[in-house]
Image 1: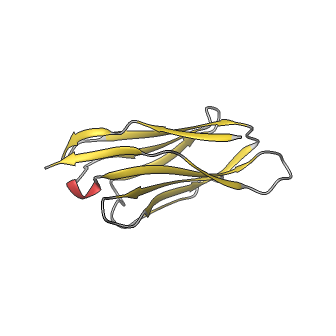
Image 2: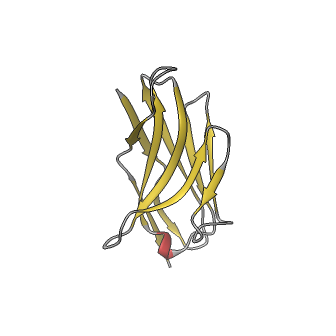
Length: 121
């Protein structure tokens, strides 16, 4: 069983910063990719950022230059550093990871429970 637990959300003023964390635990051999998604009220969930185990990253156009995704493999934790936050960044942020439980197994996808980020104007 694999669990992902997000933390670090909260209320911040526009222009401020937050760092979200996603801690993975359980029967983990490796994490092949980690993503951050967000869902604002009344809107579809959208992919914000992705990082692969090779270190390759990609970002939604709306957050490029402001958000940075990273991982600490030793801690099995992913991060989303969010700077220059805007009210339109307000959403529930979810982490999502592709996890192998053995060397030969295919990766399975897991989701965290989400953390609320609210940016006031």
